[in-house]
Image (cartoon, rainbow, N blue to C red; front, side):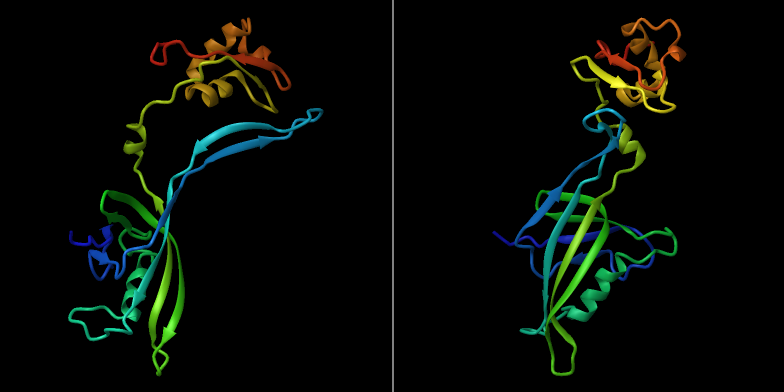
Length: 221
């Protein structure tokens, strides 16, 4: 089988020298990370803080790319180490039309990762007698990019299948609690009914409220 080379395709942007950057050597490994953001609120008198989910974070793809032209610098159509480093540096530059760095896609086999280049670290490991870089290692971090329509098209969030208890903090309200737990402030009645609240404004800071699961996420309220 022919060894498939990894590429970085520039999807949008006007100032790039080429539409596709081909890596000289495929990475030995790569890592994909994903996390969540939480709000930590300290409540006086409690043994620990309250932790509330805020949102999911975009995935990151990290790898090291090896660049070398010392062993065969005169290969036809080959890019020198300096030229390759310049190509990668442009992925972090602000494009004159986008007013932001270009959008890219890292492709290698079945891995297809649309992203922006978040960070590049360069380590020069070999020089020619005149000081020109002849070998380098690039640490590249891509952060996944998805448009708002793509996010909206994701599977809709559903409430947990168990009733939860939440405390109102500061100027918090039943409407805000519904927005956090269900994704819509219009579902406040579900919380109000579970807590026998005729008027949601009767609940204030320090009150603990039951947050029941939604029996039907698409049911109008």
